[in-house]
Image 1 (cartoon, helix red, strand yellow):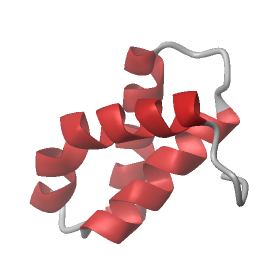
Image 2 (cartoon, one colour; image 1 turned 180 degrees about the vertical axis):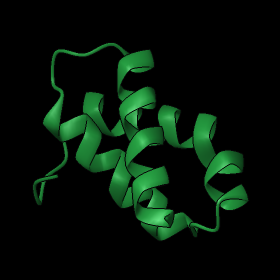
Image 3 (cartoon, one colour; image 1 turned 120 degrees about the vertical axis):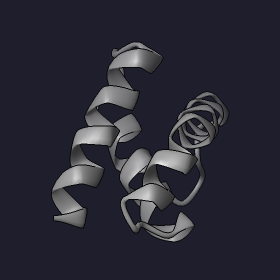
Image 4 (cartoon, helix red, strand yellow; image 1 turned 180 degrees about the horizontal axis):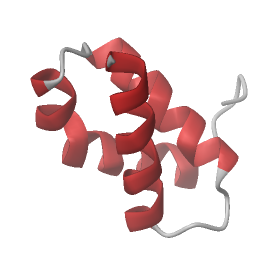
Amino acid sequence: MSDVPDPKRKAIADSVLVRLSTFALGIGLYDGIARSIVEKAVADMPEATVEQIAAAARMMMLFVSG
């Protein structure tokens, strides 16, 4: 995300991170890594729904953890 985060994108990222925090910890990803993955998903998918962003972030987390 940019140096000055868009408040809407930050809120979306925070929401998705809350949804996926237990999943991320379960596959061995710490908060900082999980947050960067979620922020990337939000930035890469500006028109996507929260559910779509969460699904993409979950897939990226699985890829990174493996």
